[in-house]
Amino acid sequence: MRAIKNIVFDIGMVLIGWYPKTDAIFEGGIAEIVEGAIWGSGLWDQMDYGLVDEHILIQKMIAIAPRYEKQITYMLNNLQLISCQFDYAKPWIRELKDAGYKVYYLSNYSKHLRRTVPALTDFVPMMDGGIFSSDVKLMKPDNRIYELFCDTFNLNPGECFMIDDRKVNIDAAIAYGMKGYRFEDYEHSYGEIMQILS
Image (cartoon, rainbow, N blue to C red; front, side):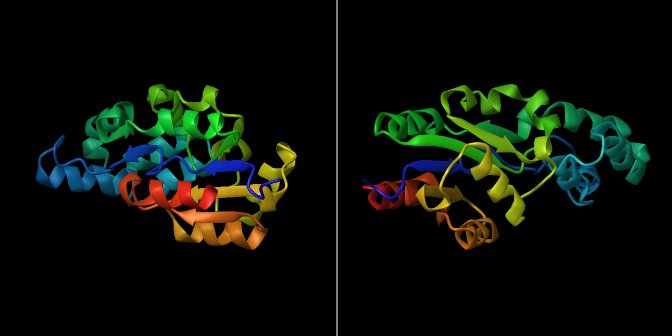
């Protein structure tokens, strides 16, 4: 019986591309202001956390640069302009499932992004389950989210293989008892991961 039975994907920069740069959308100075209000303020991370109502967080973003409310609101409503689902996401999930693995997700991910660009994560029904941070008000690398994940799906951590682009998240997964791999990009990481699994 093989040791690894469950593949656990992070989503951002593993299955989807996320590029919070807006120079192609707004002129120079405005792009910097919009990015600062949304991502430079720490408020986007709070959205991922899910502890504070997202409408309150959006108002706080606008309060940072009230003259640019229109641009900030536009960006928050058009996140498809800075994101994409990678072409390999669904085929890779399908390949792993065909090989007999259970496939899950464990991602720091906001309800706002899921609602605004639902197509980004339309691979979720293909998977065996997972946890979005904003649903449970816990975020990686907090040990409690790995524990909750394994408890929820009745998984043995030692049989789980976490794929995440952030070293701190992989380190936490390994400390909890999972196996893990820090994902760089598909070209460099896919072959190594599949070799480990084989």
